[in-house]
Length: 334
Image 1 (cartoon, rainbow, N blue to C red):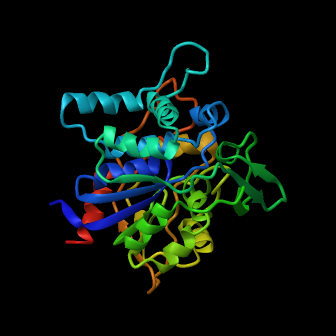
Image 2 (image 1 turned 45 degrees about the horizontal axis):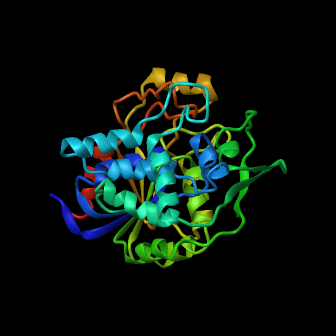
């Protein structure tokens, strides 16, 4: 049953937010995605450096997740937006059609913000997609050994493996949230902190001026969906409680609910992650806490993902299951 009267806000970026939204649109009509603007890798580097625009890959993924796909034309448009050029060795190699479409539309309309809104109408999305800020920012991380790394991509995929922890995260220049993002948070019945790279996808939103303050005052419940695996260079050695501590540190309050997967991850997948980047399954060490409801459930997708050859970025081999998550979240309102 589709729930029309409840507003769900999802905060994050990248694949995790895509996964959450893809399932939720089956159950909810009033969906809002608030998306990180710190991405600096892959085709976003070209969008930022050569076009002088805000990064659009995370926005594009949200559009694809929420797009209608009932008739042939809608299916073609959805497939166009995920199409990644894979021939030649020039700037187009690895670029997605969706990113180029939004760059062209921004030029035509004279406003990237208007282009984002119009793109949602073109794809007839369920809900809305809002950039967390309109300021062109760089993500900066300070590590416990004193090193400072600038750039989301450099933090996300460090050139040298590190076991040092990030102790501070900020934006240069400092940025304030879009008014729409603040308004939607205030009106939300449920706010979901989506899974994804902890610092570069999720916390990159919470450090935008006004977001954490709005979340602390929000009337809606806050749900945090824990990652499946640790991430080299970001959360190496992190257990569930370590992820939660970082959320609380930057949020300034505890989430009301936490979802953690309790289905066993296939042994060959765990071995792959360990060999590739010394990543392991996030260990559930969350103790009983009267202030936080911990929901342990099978939310693991059975599908093993393989990225296209044209995609130069690292991608998750396993993901949460869109529809298992959506069904579980829908039950909160049943």
